[in-house]
Amino acid sequence: MQAKAIAKFVRVSPRKATQVAGLVRGKKVNEALAILKYTPQKPAGILAKVIESAIANAENNHEMDKEKLYVAEIYANQGPTIKRFRPRAMGRATSIRKRTSHIGVVLKEK
Image (cartoon, rainbow, N blue to C red; front, side, top):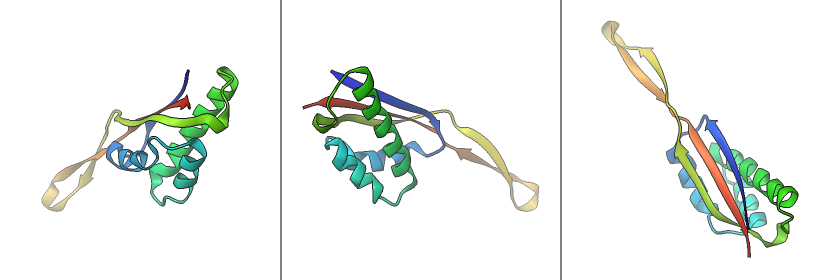
């Protein structure tokens, strides 16, 4: 049995989110939340919220025990990119790409 949670269109780069996700992949849920709590990067708080949502899904929808759960899969796929322009020297403009992510978590019982 597995429980899932997905956060879509999160305003954080998927590359940065993937680096933080690698810290908690395969860990027990309590240990993963403790690691994310003391990780200074921006994606850490977002990943913690998604993991907490997956825990709630596991407890309420699948009657799974929180103590036996571990992070089976965690991923940050690329979402749509918001395109903006910034003025530059001599009347030119440079494009700015504001990247978004779709962050997903799958929890399983041991």
